[in-house]
Image 1: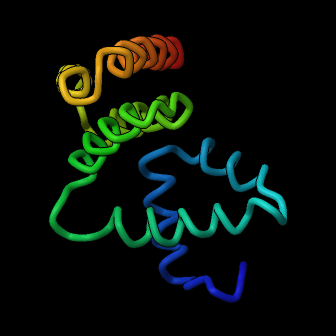
Image 2: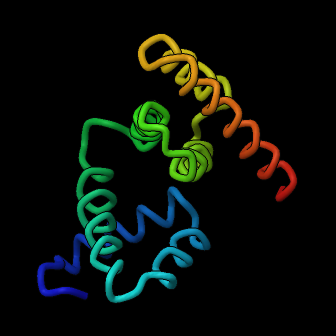
Length: 131
């Protein structure tokens, strides 16, 4: 841990991150971090997952829907697949995910939405095979 870490906020963030993204994914991210990349893991765990994801005002499912739209618009396929899984874990339905990506098509462009639909179908297939 770096000197700038708030251990309590980091621990709270780690619990939320594991709840949303799954233990295996989070552990792989932490285990693969090295001296160079660990500060980024600490930053997102503390501030993103510990602070923002635990703020009052929005439920985790609502935050997931917002993330899907933003990550889709940014064209970040790896993160989008991770957050599609997280959204499902947070109780978001496939129908709601579909509606988010249709909205992305209107406001961000069809290419972003088409890729998001393709990635979502991949994730749904993977999750069905795992079940």
